[in-house]
Image 1: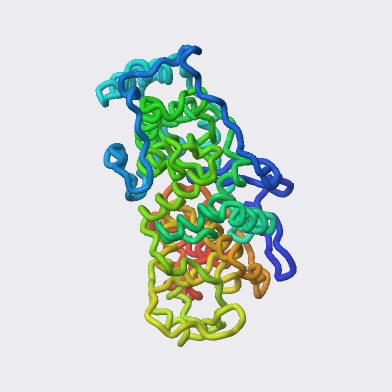
Image 2: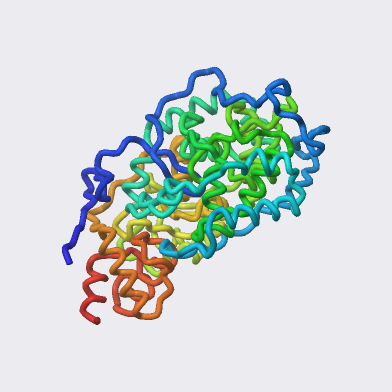
Length: 473
């Protein structure tokens, strides 16, 4: 087997994944990644979305929307309980799964389920008549290869200086809304803006696909059907409530809505009319976007006046097995082991619980993750995304650029990463799907094998570890 090892040197960060060497800037979504527009600051005016049909264009209101009410801050939201968004989504099935029934048969059954769930026949017809299976959406869901990159490549592409500059400009432009959200929800402007930048470049890359088409396809498809059937039902309720029509529900291939990319369940449970104009507009209304995002983050458990992530300097003789997202130790303990702030000053010697994250192993950048970092992991389960989004927020607040690696760091190519997963699975570890993506389960198995083999247990998959496993086979 040919090896494709790429090195990240202390003199620069290079693209590490075949096929990604000359890509345009990317946009990141809560449930997926797709190519997006170049990074530019949107003009002062509002971004436009397709207008909803007026009554003289044939869009008659249904009984459920005749006395339409949308939730504002602190007002009752009857759909919040129906679409509870706590917990992680169901585990996806393998990419090679097969559907049991034809699409048309499934869609006919789902229409009955929607009617039994209280969705009007008018909405069911408007939203689902003529829907066909979109193989392009399925292909995108299967691929998502961008998450197979190393952390340094991922963060270098996404947490750019341009996004730092644009984020600060957005905070200044929307100062009143951010100040209000900070007071009412306790979420800092930089944290909201970090997500806003990564998810859509402040509206420049929300996606241009019919959301209903994407959701119908993903709800049928065997890989994540359980999750997306709920999202499709929520989208029908959004239409039934009168917030949007199928024609105005335009977004990403993964069915997300607006500039911070809310899935339909998140929209119904947490999107609010923050400026009091009687409408919820996450496509073009900055005040609604800021308030809704802060509201959602509070639901996820954001803790007021507490940190979320901090880049730090580590010593060369740290007990590496303690560097684990699942291990939280008092900040005073990390300080006692020689971990310092970036400028070399000591950490506060307090009891604040923190985990040490080494996404590129002991020679790469190091971060202390605090309780609020859990919110990032609930927003997106990819550790690379979560660290990148959290670090971008610190950069917007004025933190310096990321520290360069102490030495060259070998990165497994995707084929080698798959082989590593197979080797670990053969030894009884649950690494999930063999997909070449080094997620939490694979890193946990790597750490266990490092301990067994007497290697520094920093959870980073190295060529040396793969060679050792090959030798044992």
